[in-house]
Image (cartoon, rainbow, N blue to C red; front, side, top):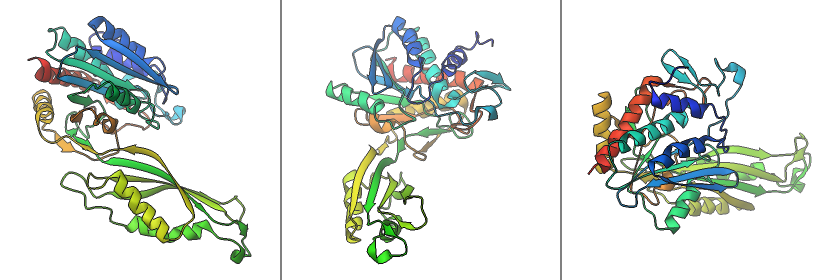
Length: 379
């Protein structure tokens, strides 16, 4: 594969060839470090419970512009259903195919090429940083959240952050994510009394006990949302009860659930209202909270305006501001950074078979990232 004339493509191919199934970095971050250290970056590798994280920074002054992303990828699915091996980067019809091409090794490559090109023109007036994890596609417990904990303890702040998630919908640059809903996950265990199904009066069926409470929770209007975010929703994602036999009333039920919530609600308000409903139905239950991320919003202002202007200049597209979709690691970074946007490739193939990214878009994306650095740090 001849990639000599396309530096972003060459690096993206190198990264895709490493099968970094979450949470395994599989040697991707050392490739990034090898490119950053000759530029003068201080590179710190932070490992927690099998997760590899990289915090790299050049400079000590503010403003600090950070690129954030992840090296881990989701499983491939049936590999024989791919048109080419998902971990052998393959060029076909103007696209680069491979797991992680769009989500988000293409963006990582564009980060590095943008930083190299920017620094070739001189040193910034502030600082450039990269925050990279191998735990974005998984539980997201030992990745960016842990790095932000460390930076917070050390009183390090980020002024502007660009997350390389694949934000575009139809054409590169058509969408900037300038916020995300909060997420709150939990496990509910409802206790009953196991017994023979022919003698229900001697048992208490947790499936029947929890059903009215679930109906109420699903119908409850948690808030009205606002001009940026839709109303908060409660969704059950998994439910399990029973021994597998048809003649046994189960003794316990386990339910996994999630809130996607607007800033009109808080973790405290959601947990209080949930527990109030459960208690009103006289359930014997245990509740465990398993994951949480605050909502964040970057209003129109300096970073949003700069990113919009750069994208319009480089692509001719006026991006839409959006807060839709799932979550991103921006929810953790928001604790130490007031302005965050997500800008990345077209997302129509992410997590699918035959994931791909336009080769032309990779080079344009690197230019967009470089131009944003120039606007924020060139003085």
